[in-house]
Image 1 (cartoon, one colour):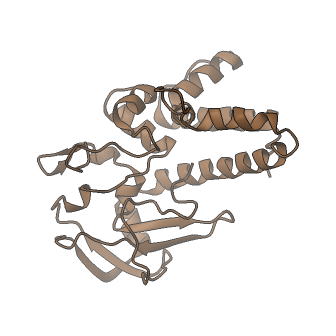
Image 2: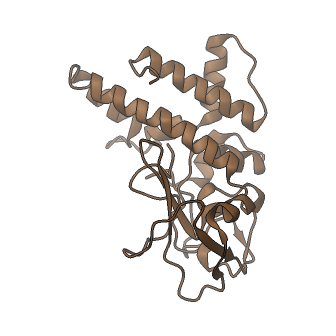
Length: 247
């Protein structure tokens, strides 16, 4: 669930093979010149918190946002036919205040291992980028200016749930092979269906929270942070009932 968490970084561009690995106290600076070139031909990964923030920015529930703005073959932000981000408007980001984590950390990619080790690497820039790179600050200072703190906190909390889910599946499926088909149906696109893939349902925070609150006899929360907390509680509860106890 945390796009920063496995072999792929938060960021939709390739990383040069010789890109150095940095941590938050390493020297780095970047000044965006709003040329818009980084907003083309990228695959922008979206986590539940990204989707929740963007949906609220547009006045939507997360389920409707997923139907309108997310690629069917993965949690990627949709693009226009010419490869531009669908929220690029006259060369400017129309959702800048609630842009995803991938866009905030750019031109860096962020990796987090299962043990919580965080590193960063530069992504390959557009050859005509007007952005200015430097070393007159630190990675941490750059991230602070981009407002990544709530995004990183949410991504890391959700990644912990994701690893618990993997542990639960690895523990249960070998003993109960009849569950494998059900697990695949819950996560993948059915081969004989034009409907949405199962993972879309998991990314629909509003939908998950609404069902959870009905089951718990609770009022459905409204603010982004309250929905996120209830979403995490809902998944945590489901994991505990399926063998994914907290570590």
